[in-house]
Picture 1: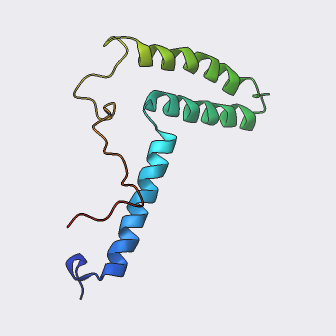
Picture 2: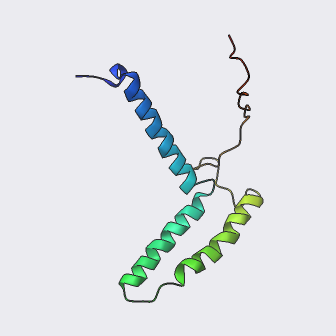
Length: 110
């Protein structure tokens, strides 16, 4: 029986790619404001629920977005009143120092 430590370089590369794809989709869908993502999902579920109940529901998602836009902007520019507490499960990402990519003509460091 093999263990993850016994996995070859190909298996580790596949796992790394899967983690990268998952991280991309998480960042793309959730982004920096999980409240908007949750609101959009709630709006889609509400629209589906109204539709299955036989109610014309085209108006719900635009209404949800009209409410979410100011909430998102207020959270982005306001102080701690709109920000999650420091012990939150989904804290805001803080940009860290970034190193610029190496020039393609730069020789590798030895």
